[in-house]
Amino acid sequence: MEHELLEDKPTIIVNSHTHTEDKFEIEANTELFSIQESVDTKYPDGGLKAWSVVTGAMCSCFATFGFVNSWGIFQDYYQRTLLKESSPSNIAWIGSFQYSLILFPALVFGRLFDLGYFRMVLLASSTILVLSTFLVAECNKYWHFLLCQGFAIGLASSGVVITIPTVVSHWFLERRGLALGFVAIGSAAGGTVIPIAAKKLLPLVGFKWTIRIIGFILTVLLAIANLVLKRRLPPSKNVAGGLFHFSGFKNPLYALYCISGAITYLGFYTVQMYIGVTAIKIGLSEEFSFYLVAISNSGSLFGRYAAGMLADRVAEFGGSEDLGRRTGMYFSIISLGALAGPPLSGVISSTHGGFHAVGWYAGKDMC
Image 1 (spheres, rainbow, N blue to C red):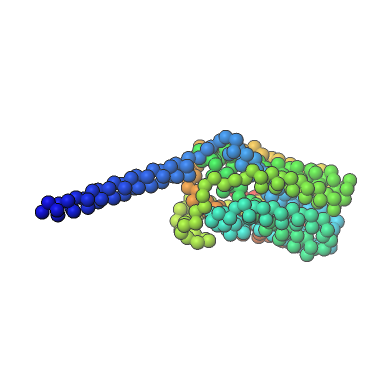
Image 2 (image 1 turned 90 degrees about the vertical axis):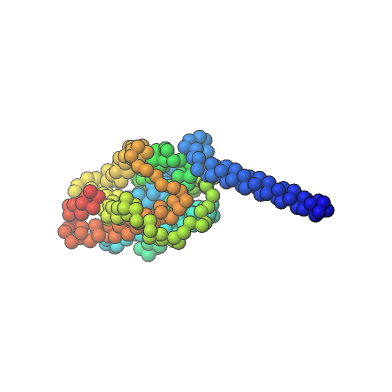
């Protein structure tokens, strides 16, 4: 009997030791999980790294939305010089594809961001955007401009654009609206500086070198963006739903936001595209008409900043696990309005013999 007890005793000790190890392991895993969760969910909402990301995003916005929003000067210049044999509506398709393609592929790029493909997409898109800009300088036929300025610049810009709200949202939560407001100022700044620079450069150095100088500006800005833009949160590879997550529209606010955005963009780019041409037709000088695109873009500076500040007070931002996909879905939906809007404005102008009806159409869509 004593022998049996001695044999059983080590067994009891071993089992107790195993239980203790399991307990320690569970506690250690719980602690590690808590630390990881704390690191992932605590947003800096400021600091050198966070604001450097905002700076890089502003540079990206300047080089993409700022450049694309300057299309009005090219619409006017092409109608009067390089593409004067083409109708205003046909020329407008170049800008429409540019406006649309900067938004529509965001559905794919946004999901790639969620899966962790950020640095490669940003670098490749930046490179294509710069090269396409330099190629525009060599274009002399309608289909050349359509391919380089419409398709290539639009697609490449989309790969850069999708990183802007998603990366910034990794670093800000309580002050996310303010940060994104500053980022949006980059778009207004680009849409102001590029038309003025083009106006000054075209008579001095000609079309080719004007485009090349713009290309060099984009090179510097995108180099800064590639150096300072960094994601903070880990990729969310296990998020369910695939490329297009239809259940996201179960949120009525998100669904309404997407629908209203698409309707707004039916008229949003009409001003940017036709304001210079309209000004000349009503008797303003060609010199002053060039500046109207810059004036309209600069006018949005305060609104972009104020909207960001207001958003922090009245809006509630969701989680970041599939922010790239949800942002991409929104961009892709509103791109349909961006694609159809400017050509529709061109058709309305041709039908009614002026831009009065176009103004009513665009203003109605934006109200």
